[in-house]
Length: 397
Image (tube, rainbow, N blue to C red; front, side, top):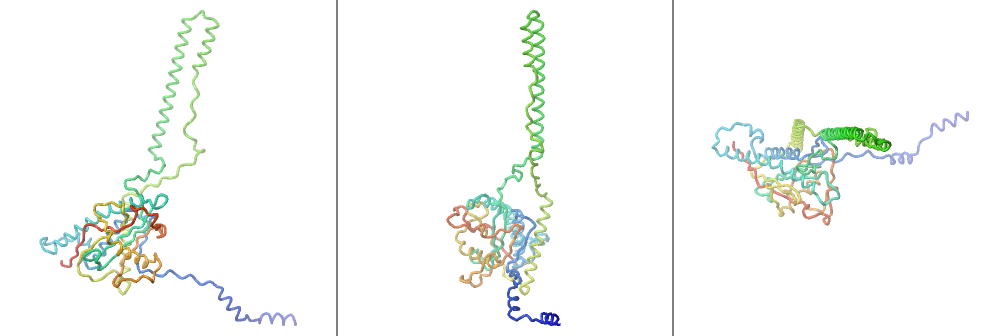
């Protein structure tokens, strides 16, 4: 009975509230999800963003901005396919000028990002070669870039740093054609050696027959000379093989073939559709506004952040814009979650920044490209450049 009583007392034992509180406090809280950012982003299915991909997405974004900001009555691609009636009217002339400027900008952006990728590859501020960098392009709506009514920033993360004109197969891995040429050279060398050996044997045989006919009474001296000539006429030992055996050296790494033209086009179309869906989703938020807004037709300027060594005939360096656009870039990075928000900096009224991020699978952090000002050469200093053309919006049709 006592055993049962003890067991009953153990079963009826209550846990004191202090232990319950201590147990609850020791539990780790569930991790909070990252806060949503105001700047949308897209992630392409690639390790790096190529120059052609960046140019295609940026020109697509410019076309979306023109339509969302009421600078054109229809999307730019749709206007290019529409058949114009009266080509002498004022609206037709404006449409023609805008389409021509848009086509010029598209061709310039293709070579712009190629030149920017080359400038990143020649960067001297870091130790070793850079594989990628960050590019920033701003679409500014207003009379001038400094007096902007609207600013849309696009950030390209992990833009491939590659010297223009450099071949992808120059990585020390021999190609199939080089391997075939090496094998042919080895075969030719072996055939030449065998032919020379046969010629030497024939000459030695002829010399031996001549010596035997002219010296019949030489005796022991003739026999000794014939023995020496026989030893010298023996074929030399073949040289050691110059090609290592397959078992002695590891096989070369497989050479990755570049994507075909059809695969590259498909990747560009997929990225464009992803950008369109992202912008459409962003417009669905914020009470249906998002990036869309009603604006009077004005001029559209394109501003690019690039190092001083960047060279392109269509871009003009604008040192005077550094202060305003550096502040714009800081705000863009803070609202996209790339930098912590600083409360000690007062923002100007009406300084709203919009934009989108273009990312790859390889995430490039900002700390990897920031270097102290003492280590940055002057030619690698980042400044702002403006496109020498302009896009003029219109509302009449």
